[in-house]
Length: 369
Image (cartoon, rainbow, N blue to C red; front, side, top):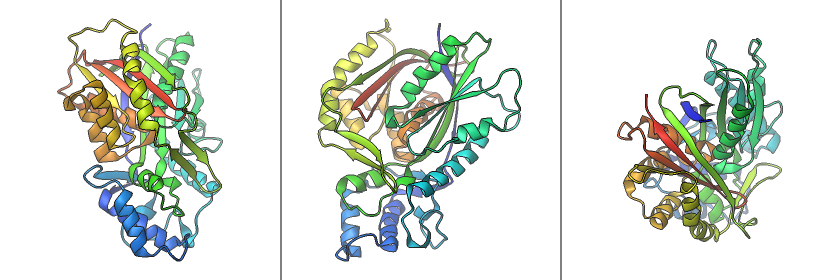
């Protein structure tokens, strides 16, 4: 049985922030909240953020659902009264906004899926935004069930597709469809108490994003045929990347050895992924690379001897939107579909990395109707 991905629909966050303003806001929020020693004056904070924050040459814009990051004088939406919000407040914010966006994905009269896989690593509260939304729908003989694919981080779109394939394969219904919805509000997890280089990179790289797409056994418009999915847990790497809830926010750790471990495992992984089916040697191959940062795309290009043209959409999504965690690869897939220079029959190799240390990949065939 063949499976297809189509019906991509992204919704941008409420606020768009250029990168220079974003770095300025990282300084402003720290000064307003003052959760640090007196020795941290404005000059020290500005120097650290200028040194380690990603520049506008690497990312031009990022989206955020949190008004507090926008320049100018305005009422704070999260950091009220100079206080650092706890995790309960941040999760409440997530659920409220995620539910609003979910209702935009499923306007009255739109086709509802038989199954909905809700994906996030930045907001957990039960019932979820997906459950709250589905509960408002008028039920008929074909109801929608919800499954949560949570806390896998940046590579979660590929496990979500495996989950969706399982539901599709098990169904006996005609025209059964599974929707996958990603909702990431990374900017909720700002930690003003740290000036460590690692945390400044994280705060200047990650952003917010929402996207929905559909998996079915029939192609609905232009989309992708799923040819192969593969995942590898790289040995002896479990301590190198983590995403851990604290009392106030989720904290990311990224070990210095991560790029080398990925580099060493990358080529054998991609070779085994492509070997799972008989690829046409003359096919165009596009690479959808999750941009854990600008250097990640460079490293993959160098290790696999790729051309810049093969990674155009990956670079464009990073530059224009930032790293939206699990929502990033689907945004790259959407960009590939919108690029009319990409011809039907081209192969799309996707690569993403996350805690574990996990390397996840897929091969799709681009289909145009």
